[in-house]
Length: 67
Image (tube, rainbow, N blue to C red; front, side):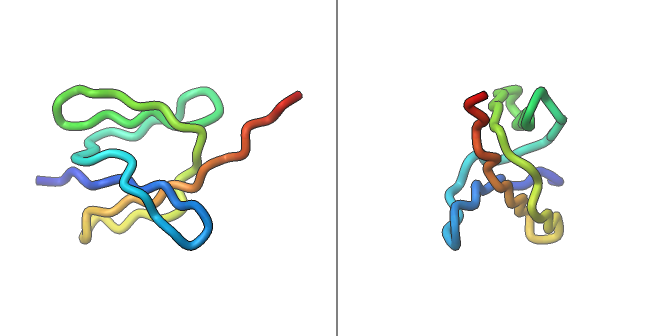
């Protein structure tokens, strides 16, 4: 299995955002994540780090622009 878990980084803490991520695509101002079951989540974030050997993707949230 090649899927990984995506974590959202806030300061020094990491929160599980999505399990079994199979696809990550740029989408608007952020990313679209799709898991192995076809569930899609969208997040305004950038990829901070990927360690596929350990099945971990670290995302860093992008501040929402109010303009």
